[in-house]
Length: 173
Image: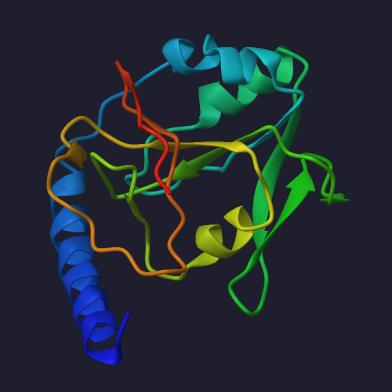
């Protein structure tokens, strides 16, 4: 990807983030995430990295409680100074073992599994170190055919979940 294309992708992403953040507060829907919890990937997982939602992100409180109730080792991200992530247990210990599933926030997902995040690249960096099944939580209308520009460092997700559905993406090279 040349420098001009990289700048253009960054600009388009910034404009999309601004638009999607403005729309998000009108999309808030509650969910118990049972359809996600019942997937084969999560049912068989021993270690699940998730996040603690804030603001207008899809609420993860019930999801995280259920993961713990089901006996999963639940990890949450801790942001480092360089904006990379490390995973920690609910007791605060740093975790460096195998992760089976990563549940992450997103502002938008396109039909190819490209994820638009908050723009820091934290999840992209963390995802390069795991082969975990990757699922992003979004609101209805945030999975669409509107393409998310992607750069070489951007990591795709395997699936996206809304309050009611799970959409799986075909593996891309």
